[in-house]
Image (cartoon, rainbow, N blue to C red; front, side):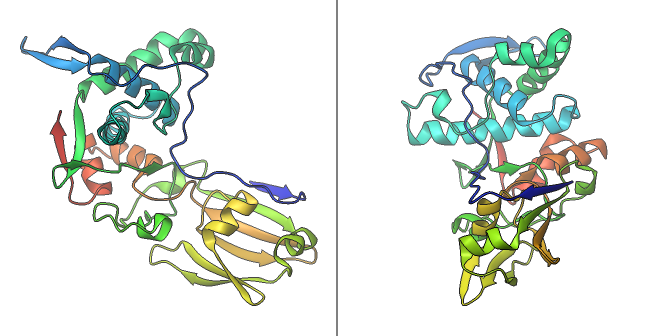
Length: 291
């Protein structure tokens, strides 16, 4: 898929996950528990408010037709992200937790007559992992995730400068099956020069995972992330080519590349891995704990 940009500067926020509240006012994250019966008729406490929030996040972040184990992995990652935010700010509202939550009304509009089937599938997968979060050194982790990688996840420190031991680069198979695996953006040389002063960008450094770290433009050096945001590239894993009038950025992956890849998780699930195996693969050295 090729896209053309002939306008000035197009800036797209790329930090995933993004907050989407659908205009719904959500309550402060109080702990509301109810009893849920296990298959062996034993009861366990469930924070219904949290789990219902996670349902909305999974519905907003991952395609409903993904396999169960991928949806479960997404549920644990989303719950972990939320719990980390709540721990840092007990008065935070769910709508202020930066994840793509969608309401039941939005699900109904999006899914139509398939609402009941899709909702119950996601709900069952969320509640199958109820209360489970990822921890490192007894603390909830920063459970970031992205849509698609270039075949390897990126290290956290190369995107946000933080060096988190559980967000290391790992191989992510099956990414080429994602509809977002490849993309290209064509920028006119004139437009590029208006922004950067010249039209001869050269990749000067890549990370070990293959993402662009820096780009040299004339005498100036810019981060790959700067180039990505400026032209709305889907990833910092890109190559640069030119023709007579344009500069073409060809990308692999979609998102920042840090943490769990959703399409990688889908591939792992379809290959027979359960959600715990998926999570331990993408979040190095973490443990799954019940709240």
